[in-house]
Image (cartoon, rainbow, N blue to C red; front, side):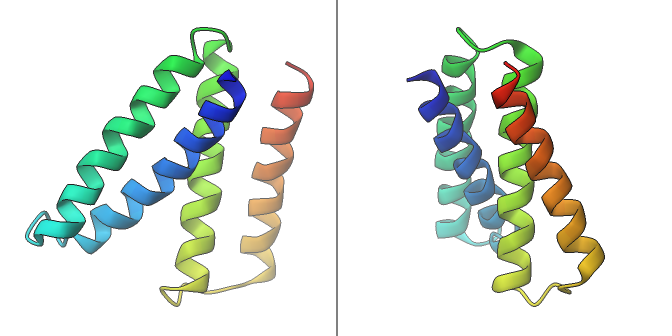
Length: 104
């Protein structure tokens, strides 16, 4: 169960990062509220997961999911550049996240 919660918490990291940008410095109410709720749920999920998943593994996987999700959102929705180098770097992060899970 901790792994499922960790994955959900990582996805919520992407949600709060996107909402943070959309809030325009907390000047827009709805994205600011989404940011706050997603942040609390994400951190809470991370804290729950780290009861049974080692600190380094849990945190690295949480950050990796959030980083990959945010980068993919940026490329798919926000017009961020899609280059071979960026995709390669994301694949390397994914490899590290999978490796941490498999070698846990």
